[in-house]
Length: 261
Length: 257
Image (cartoon, rainbow over all chains, first blue to last red; front, side, top):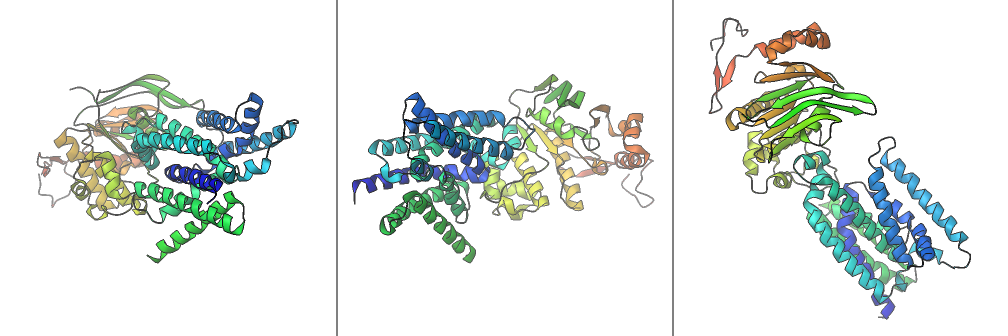
């Protein structure tokens, strides 16, 4: 196997491992639109990174974290429903990113790469960042786990029982931002949320406890990465979308299986 | 006796509209305080303030340090995407509790292995009460605890709540949206309409002119029937002691008194 394919498989599997449990919360707490908003802001992060003279991936990460903080803060207002607010921010960020990219005259940016992902181009450094960052994110999630589970049942109930829900909510938003930023290289702006949502949704059909669902989501995501990249290699199709197609196929199979039982 | 939770002149506005206006309320161990009032009276807001979920604009809320609260919210919408068995739901509140025993006490012993998202409204209500009791709380906060529960079940649940208050010295703060089920065992009724219209023993409240003005004589009379049938007390073992007086309304065949 060529080395670039090895790196792609490792990066994708590390990402899928971390994305599984976070994807469960995205599904349980209806945060899919939040994930989309962060993903759509990535182009703006790339531009800001280039302007600031730092690595575009770092620009994405910083911008995603700042946006997550702003959104957490903006949730307090009640005049607009949160999906309306996210709809505005999401598309504003995408449009501003595309406009800003076109204004960067002397820098050529691989727009398709950012939109669709460029997993075959990841280097060993990216692989290390994904596994390191993923481990940190999972450890942090593990610490917030009881509170986040209680909040997924009912936030008022969790707070009344002494859970620190403000800390856990902010923590989850920042960690999801971290995962989204890391996923950008693998599947790109347009498909990032799918890597969170589809494996978790497929895992639901196979699970009777929250922990089972988190583990299944990781396993299904990793299987989708391996089979998607394999298919991409075999049929010469784009890597990121092939991974998502594989995830959707597994989702279908899992639901067929659950329906038969 | 030290208060479990004490609200002093609490006021709160939502979007400029007053939701609570100078509300004071105290719950002591072993006492049942029932809050009644029309829709939009601020009953659920009052509960959230008492729980510390919402901070009042003015006034003070004092909870006893180390207070353990058992809370039953008005509604619980567990998403179907969340795989959660009743057993696990109970374990989240009480890792080492007698889950089956707790469910048996609320007549929901059959649901232990079911998924929470598949329970009926009445079953979920019972499970939430069992869960609140499993925490061995000092204070039970119940927001419409019999919503969706059938008529027989409502009486059972109110008896259980009264028993918990009397035997285990738990304080109970109860919201009822339905005057007809304000239970005989209530020690204090707080009639709320943004401000406290009147408060006190059920009989006293039922006669209060502000109460009569708020609910109208027809509704008020029906509450009076419920509160005046104060015809039994609970012994320590949970059995019922009937002590009917000369005004017993159970009719000629009544032979408890």
